[in-house]
Length: 98
Image (cartoon, rainbow, N blue to C red):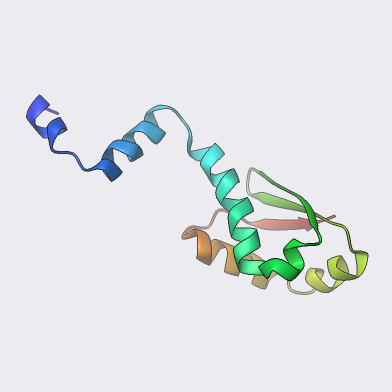
């Protein structure tokens, strides 16, 4: 890329290049998964959420209520679909409720 082209890059392109060059996408995906859990599941469920961790393609969610954990386990695929839709990509393949 010439210096002239670099001067006219959009901020979004510069940030994308920065994320790619520094291998930051995995970390950003982990943060996005946590944020999306709260927005998709709502404050009532988030209140019982103690820990959220994304490792590879599996989202681990620790809940303080065994009753809620059991109820959510019946709709795991729908939860995964909703989370991935909100993320805009198929980031989560498996959901583990603890």
